[in-house]
Amino acid sequence: MLEGIDENTLDEIARIACGGDDYPVYRSAAQLLKLLQQAGWDNVTANNGEQRRNWLTNQLRQRRNVPGAIDALVCRLADRREYINRNEPLASAEVTKMLNSVLVMEGFEIAHSQGRPAIRPYKRPEDQEQQPPDVMLHVAMADIVRDADLAAILESRLNEARVCDRNGAYSSAVIMLGSLLEGVLLDAVKARMPGSSEPLKKWNLHNLLETAHDNKWIQTDVHGFATTLREYRNLVHPNAQVKIGHAPDRDTVLMCWPVINAALNDLAATAS
Image 1 (tube, rainbow, N blue to C red):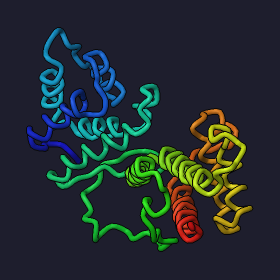
Image 2 (tube, rainbow, N blue to C red):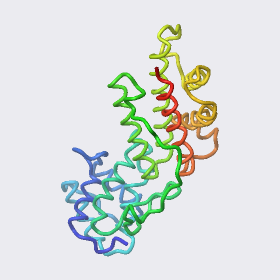
Image 3 (cartoon, rainbow, N blue to C red):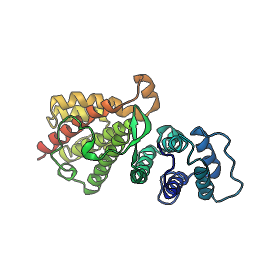
């Protein structure tokens, strides 16, 4: 699809791939060569001291009209597998967002399906398939969390979960939502049980959910579904995914959002 795209677009793709400065992932000359190889490019000439971005831009221009070559590179840049060993769980989503801001000018975008990126014609928001309605969030984080600094952090995590969800990073989205829920409940315990003998660092999400339910801060349905969310949140540990036997997908995230929204609504409604 991307054969013959504008040279300025190629320059920006090269800039994103090289990284550094305000870009998520820095790649050395050797890592850029590996990137092209991972994208399926054959017979790539190694960099012999040329400036990284100039070298990569030249490589892109040489294959600009080769069917599928630029598509494969862009998809590899957006692929979560590219960042497994980089300790950058949000890099794939951030890079996808950057690439889409460039590709839209060519009439294309990256979409994730079943964990894999693909190039497709750009769809305007009003043309995209509408998601089914779910439990709406009726409160702001500041209405629930008394600590202003913590509220800002949790609001940021909520936004990061949305970014992950939109860009196909479903495991990251679920982990972020579980982390958010734990932070909100821990603040509730701190505010509503000041005399608790249990140190805050000893609380885990299981105990927090039980306490919130026992004290009627959250309803029974939220408690039940949030227990399942807690199990998926544990996927932050790779062995937990081995135990579960599958990775979260779009359906998993769609089931988690109503749980988070309902929990936040319940906590706001029961705050004194």
